Structure formats: C-alpha cells, structure tokens
Image (cartoon, rainbow, N blue to C red):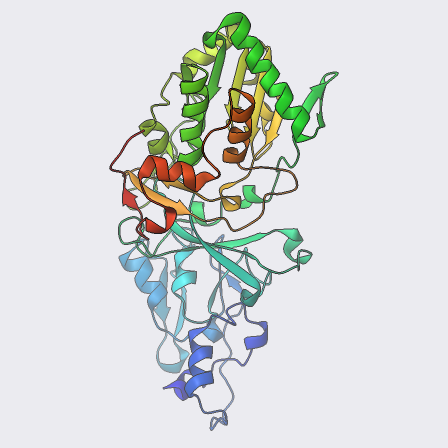
Length: 434
C-alpha cells in the first residue's frame, strides 16, 4: 500500500512544511521499500494553490484519504471540498465557485496526514523540530478551547520576524472542543508578540517615558494612599479584566476589595459588544474568563464607575487591560493602566505597569460552562513586563504588608483546594465560588 501511495507522491520532504510530523513520511521510514519499483513518469497536479484565506493545497502530495472532504461535509457542514475525476487522476479540489473560508477551515490542516493542506500563515516560517509546545487555553472567546501553544524553542529569533509564538493547534478535550478549534482563535495570537508594553511608564510633562519598576510602583502606591486618605474608598475604582486569570482576579478582590475596602470593582467593558457566535464552538463573549470574574463577585457597574469618573468623583482609576472611552478618562486625577498591550487607555494613563500575556505565565481560566482549565507558561515575559500576580503581590507588600502567597499556584490552592497537578487534565467544573 505504501508503494501505491508513493507512485505519484513527490519526493520533496526537505521542502515540505509537513516534514517532521507527516504520517506518510514516518510509515515510509519504518516500513517502506527504499528501492522504488515504479518506472513510469509521475502525474503532475496543481501545487501551492490557495483554497481560502488560511489553507494552501498541493494536489501532488494528496493521498485521497478524504478526511478534509468529510470534515466539510460532517463537521463544518459547509461543503466546500470534494474529490473529482477517477482512478489515479482523482484530486481534492474546491467545489465550483466556492472558497474554503468557513469559520473552522484550519482544522483540515490538522487532520491532513501529509503535506497536501498547509497553513498559509505558517508556511516556511519554522521547522517543526524547532518548536516547543505547552498545553494552553485559547483566549479567543469564552468557550476556552484546549490548545497546544507552539513556540520557537531555539535561539533562531531572526526567523519569522522574531515572532516567538508560531502557531496554535487544538488539544483534545471531550468536554469542551473535542478535536477542533475555530479560525478566529487559531490565528488570533498575534497580540502575544505585537504592540507590547515592554517597560513600565510614567507620565512626565505630558508624555509617557520608560521608568523602572520601583518608581512606577511608588507612584501607584502614592496615588492610592493619597486618595484613600483624603477621600476614602469611594474615590478609588478598579476595572478588572475577563482576560485575567482566576488567580489574578482573586488577588484583585483580596487586595482592593478586602484590604483597601474598595467597593467599585467591575470587569465588563460597556463598549464591548457580543461578537459572532454559533451552535458549535464559537461564543459571542470574546473573553476567556468572564465566568471567573463573575464568580469572584467583581460585578460593580463599569458604566456607573465611568460616570463617576466623568464627574470627577473617582480620583484613582486602576484599569486592567481594557480599552475605554478616552474622553471619560480625562477627568480622572490618576489613571493607572496595567496590561500587556498598548491601547488608547494605556496611552492616556499617568502610570503604565507592563503586564504579561497568558503565554508568559501559569494560571487558570473558567469557561462559559464553569469549567476551570489550566494553562502553562511557555515563554518568558518580554523585556521588563511582569505577570499580574507578581505585580499585585508587590503592591500588597507596599499597601499594608505582604500576603501569604509566593506565586499563582498558592493563590489557586487556597481558592480551589488543589494544586495545579491535581486538577484533571480536561479541567474541572468549579465546586466553589470566591
């Protein structure tokens, strides 16, 4: 059978993106005849043909397993692909007048056992044997699909424009996403390496300039203590983020809510509207941890917080990750932004605390069904950015004394009653609320 499969298959493994993770290549190396008995000319077919925005077809490498056509028939039910012609002239191709652009098109790349279907964004970017891989959770929506976060594990940073994260691949979870993930989540990881806040910043003479962490934290502490001392807890408001981990949200509640007495802690951005959703995987809520923020009770109305800020009643507004209406923020005496990426709110802030993305820290998210799922650190934070747990524990030490935690797992153990290793590999539905 391997001989038959290889009769027209090109001998181009060295230049094929699938090399290193190709089933046909592996079987041939283990079982194949190394001296070919095939003497005829190979049949030439279409090569490097874009099928849609993400998928490229090489018909010569196709072994007609029909996995991709079955996916489009049975899973996405979009019917873009078919097998045409007969015998050894058979080919996989697009149905007339169609494009492979359904919301789950990238899955045909995963299930292709050879290099016939490859990813346009990943082609010729990095050899698979240079990739490291960590179990993670997609942050594209509240579904929380389980993924493998694959990154450049070598010092070859000059490859692929220095991008560290190379691709996301679905990770099997029978309760959440089975074997699949959507294109929106699969290709939506650019924020990990692009437009990042790499250093803390302080505003001086109307502009933000890089600062060291000691000065940035001292300014944040000074602003909070001054507001609390002069105007009380009502003068401080916090807008947490549903993109933060459970551990970070727990510390926000403990530090600001319980220790400092701040009542105004919300997380829902009023300007953020539900996005596209379907009845398969995609949720309209495009945040990975809204259910976690809800469970921690951080449910003050952000609209009311912003109205108070517009009246000048909020003296210190601490914002995590969100991009808010800039006109409202002009009335706040001290705006502190803590997050990983630049946006209008960060650029308007008086102090910016450079945060880490989920790829650069350990933690958990709670998905739309209440399932607590772990993600693992794959990369070191860029430059001087820090994860929110580290920053919040540092802040706590300056505002009333240290908390009894060393890292995110300590926070998780107190909240969930288990260590990370004790959590079931497919996640667990939370039995407790904060």
